[in-house]
Image (cartoon, helix red, strand yellow):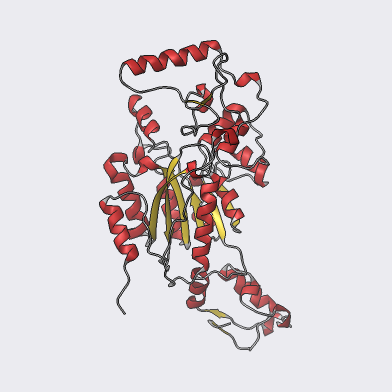
Length: 412
């Protein structure tokens, strides 16, 4: 047993169970042959068992290959992270999302209803876990969200009282539980929001204050789905581990690969809406604003699907030829556009489905990242990569600093 002292050579089964519970592991991880452990004869014959912190630390740093890595699914939406990390062999032990309609979809597909507002959940009530996953709300930082809030005189970024401070709840959970890894996702504008100050605060919180080694990369979902969807991923490890983002295909499928054959007429735009969109686009084009709808064919890759798609579908309109108005994507096509399997249940209205898929991650992108994160955690913490790590996202001074720290090797 290594870091455990006891009066008898073999503890009882009851003592072993209590020890495993205290460490948050399975009994089988501590003992090779559970059947050989004796049962306690009486309460007076119980043996005092002392747990040394070195053993617990080792279990936290080097997860046994015999157990699944545990993850929590924050701001889980409809479960994009969960699909990916369960496919990578991990176990979800906690999920949370405040939106009641997303909870319905999540429960229909995973058999459990996520907890609501994460602010209402105490850190101590979250089960122990190895990996924190979270696509924290992007509207306070997205280009579209910032523009809209500015036009309405509303606050954005960290000043958004409803959504902007949710990152700091993540930080509190990381500080309390100190998991080995996290995977965070947001819009690429997170790096440039407020002239880079927002990202600087996030990065310093994760590295200087929480002690994680952080790797970042902007990834376009078009590698796997027929949609340009650039998102920034922040992946962190504690203790430090060498990590390299996986290679992604340089080109992906076209729109025809996800289109349904028989589409109800209700998805075709009315004459009134189609005329409005054309006139609106022409007015902005004449003013030099460049605003317009996104008309595509089966040979194209679409713009980014947004949560506002339910309003008019203007960012992705599927051409039906010169003699017919274009149409919106169906909810099932939106699911495919985000990389969800056709087995996924869509139990909500079209309006809610469009919102949910517009807020989702691209599942195959997260699947690749989950595989790499799991592989990294299965390696010894001090084992370096053979390849020189390629950074990530930009050539900013911060990114260059991270590359220098990442590639540093002490001289022997």
